[in-house]
Image 1 (cartoon, rainbow, N blue to C red):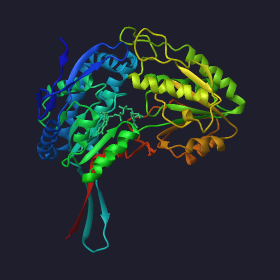
Image 2: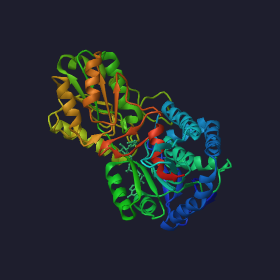
Image 3: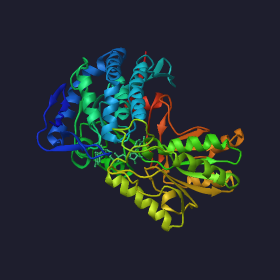
Image 4: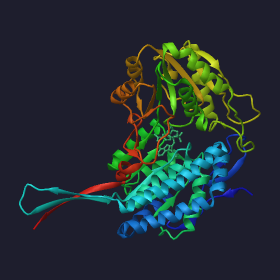
Length: 477
Ligand code: NAD
């Protein structure tokens, strides 16, 4: 019997009021479960439940809200192995990384709960005698969280934990590609004593359920992670009611390798950043700029890593570095970009084809050289295990090429010269720069993109305060 999940609205599991969506394993096509394809009425009822629950939730002491979050984190840890297995099957993530995702999620919820005792306002001096000015931070109200499929479980926490600790309630719509882990999350939330309506989960497609959620006038803040195209549509929908938006969108992260870099370290870090999650990560290395003198040596090392990659179906083989791409469209897009790069004059060093496996959306780890700045492969998001390399003659050239992009999420530089590293930090126009390490953010940081990579950011103190509004009080005594 295939499981049919129910929406979680106002503290209760509510059956689908109509259509459903099949969820399948991208490595082998197996049907895993069905979820509701929620109607606009269902979405409206979830937003209404969040609205009703918000005032009482805001009135709790922050530490009480944090204790609810800690209960949820503890439940995640109790079911950590099972949850990782679900992510492996529905997203195609390799088991080790799926387990990291689940454990990181629990830690992230606890980290955001810690902020309960650190929420701060400010006291300002006034131009008037006997007056004090206060800045208070208040919750925004009802938050809508729209999730992608590439880190489906962690992104629930990235939306929910800062929203709840600051006194907001939330309605989350997971990606229709990877919703099962979110419905299981709702199950474990239901086993805690979180008040009804504080967290609501609704399944559905983006163009219908997602659109109904972001168009709802009773939503105060939309926090979205996904593609630039959808982010743009959401911003247009938000414009109707002037709903606030927080958008975490695509990336095209440059990795700069200077002649004085530790090449073993650089090759390993860039390779890891490229094949992790089968290249489907917004912040991971998507293009390399390497100084001419070390080009061949770096390419040799990158090729060795690529050729040694173990890939396949992670639901039957745990000892893999890479699983499949998420779906046929993802595979076709990666294959088309590589073909275009070949036509544009780039050279394939290794890979360059759909993998010859019996089933699933697999693509070979692929290294490309002779890339040029005008090629799509250096300008558009690939979102697959394909790494193009362009030769440069100076740090200046590498920085200029890096900045010449519609994306501005993450960047990295590999060098043993602190002056070069600091110059890059000053001149790179990106939300994040990693120096001599792989691309991967920390929960204390601030994950935020420039240009088309997004608006606002997540994580740390600055991410937390994105879920608040400032209230200024003038006290004359
Ligand atoms: P997507 O934009 O296709 O879908 C994301 C979500 O939006 C899904 O839940 C979908 O149902 C929903 N959606 C689609 N149309 C909608 C609409 N009109 N209104 C409301 N919701 C709608 O993205 P994806 O393919 O799931 O994710 C991959 C993309 O996400 C990549 O571009 C990647 O770079 C980006 N991403 C960014 C970050 C970051 O932090 N910047 C993190 C992860 C992924």
